[in-house]
Amino acid sequence: MTMEKTITITAREGGDRVDALLARAEEIRSRSAAARLLEEGRVTLSGEAVRKNYRARPGDEFTVVLPEPEVSGLAPQEIPLDVAYEDDDVIVVNKPRGLVVHPAPGHPDGTLVNALLAHCGDSLSGVGGELRPGIVHRIDKDTSGLIIAAKNDMAHASLSAQLKDRSLSRVYDAIVHGGFKNDAGTVDAPIGRDPRNRQRMAVTEKNSRPAVTHWEVLERYERYTYIRCRLETGRTHQIRVHMAHTGHPLLGDTVYGGRRDKGLETQCLHARGLKFIHPRTGEPIELWTDLPDWFEQARSKLGKPME
Image 1 (cartoon, rainbow, N blue to C red):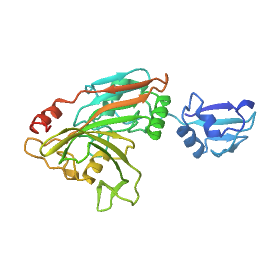
Image 2: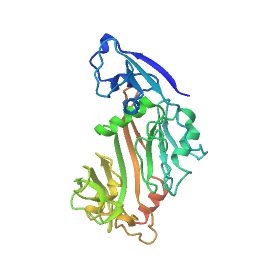
Image 3: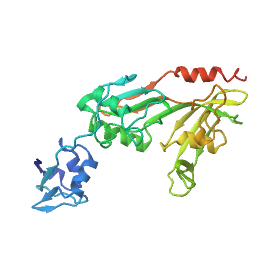
Image 4: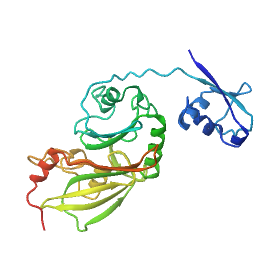
């Protein structure tokens, strides 16, 4: 059964695009949801379907037919979570290494999303898609650290916008092979699917997107370097690809050329810091997490830091 809602556009709202106006409705609440309704012909004006770029006139009355909510096939699972921050709008989790973020082929359950559904209940946002409710960004299975999820559509829209305009800041600590001449630098190189291996990403000009990683040296060792990276963009495997591109693959990252030296088999990458603007209050929130034990153990096996 569908539900019908009539929205009246007032004189004050005349001239706005209809998708922007619909996004303000409590039952829709996002521009992407409004766009889907318009594309599916669920929005009419005087019995005619409305295009999303239509600019409303004062007094226009739109009829919006809302579909029944989709029932997600995801099951809540009681998986322990290390919650770094939580309120009614957002939740930040310190993800352990080995936990997949959202279901995918080969990982139908036991994911962070399953855990969040159990922890947050019905409040979790669905804007990220049926299999990715609330997820704004993701980190790899073998990467640990801070990841943020939205608990409602308003928060999801705000955080997604911050991710797009690069005001949502993410900082990672990593151990890489080799040494650097400089103490800091920037890798500005586009990333796309590796044309020779579709399972990997690569620095490439073909079907790629801009990618920028800023790095700085924290500690130097004889054969390795402990660095901190700040993402300006958020491409798949960005730090792993950029470090390999510079000739300094992550320790333990065999996909991108990092050896698993004896006793150092772990991919050494940890999402250490996260900074964002709270979607409701507008206040900046900055969070940091300690290095996990496995990362500290890896550092202890590198030998004595160089002066």
